[in-house]
Image (cartoon, rainbow, N blue to C red; front, side, top):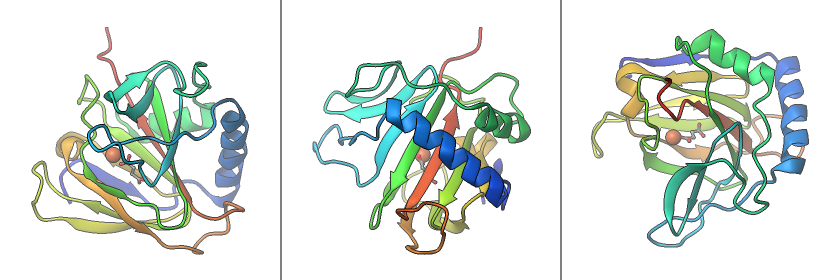
Length: 201
Ligand code: SIN
Ligand code: FE2
C-alpha cells in the first residue's frame, strides 16, 4: 500500500452506521442523488451522487468542479453532520475542517474506474472515506496510471484515509458485493468522501 494509506476496519459500529444512514436520508430529501455525466463522452456515471457541506463535487459536460449548490435544485448542499465531522477529526491528522462530503451511491452493478482526486487546491489535507452497506472491492495503485495496484475489501463501517503519498494515488471501486450487508434496506453501498477543497487562510 502507498505510504499514507490508512485503513480502520469497523471504525463505526452498527448503531453508529444506522444513525448515519438516518441522517443521510434526511439530508437526501433536500439534496437528492443526481446523475453525474462524464465531461468528454457525455456518458452517465454508474454511481449516483450528492454532497453535504459548503462545497460539493459535480461532473457534467462542462467538466469536474466544486460548487456551492446542487446542480438540479440550485439549492445549497445540506451541512455535514457532526457525526461525520467527528470521524474526520479522529483520523485525518489535519487541523482544518473538510468543506465537501461527496456521497456516492452504488446500486447493483455500479463501479468507479481508477482515478485520482485532484480537483482540490490543498493536497496537504487527506481524503477520508466512510463505507456503508454492501462490501466493495477497492483498488489502489500508485501516482501514475498503469502502475501496480492492490485491493482492499471495504465493508460497512470501515474508514480509510488517503493522505501523504496516497493522496494522489489512483484508486477506484472494481465492484460491490451484492447482499453482503443488511444496513441499507434497498441494498447497495453508500460511500462518503470528505475533502478539504480550498487552502486554509
Ligand atoms: C471515490 O473514490 O470517490 C469513491 C471511493 C469509494 O467509493 O470507496
Ligand atoms: Fe476518489
